[in-house]
Length: 108
Image 1 (cartoon, rainbow, N blue to C red):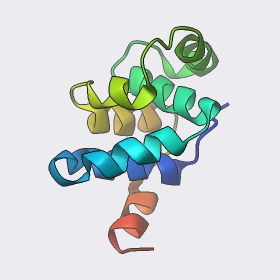
Image 2: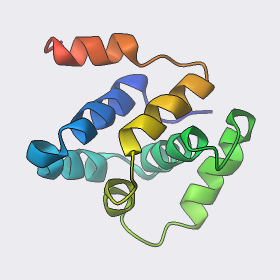
Image 3: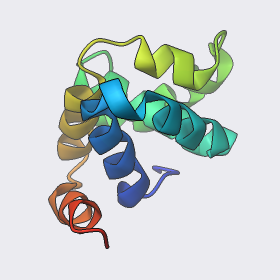
Image 4: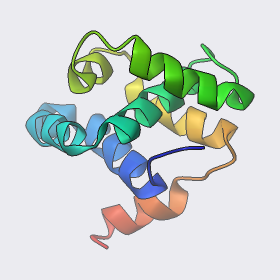
């Protein structure tokens, strides 16, 4: 089961698209997430880049927890196309970020 809300994933996606001006804010946001949320975020990214299938979500989360060697923010920010992979991963899991992203863009 995914242990992070679509709203939080959408927040990371949107800030990731604005890294030039939002890197510090994004790094702080990721660091404030609990371990389960951070592992879920990494797992979603892995699913989005086809390292795991959507049906392997639990395995991906477990792997993210056991193989974490760097801070999650460093790992995610060092991953090319992070925002695209997160969106693709959520889509693969059947979760649309469109509404959450629209709310965030409108300031809701």
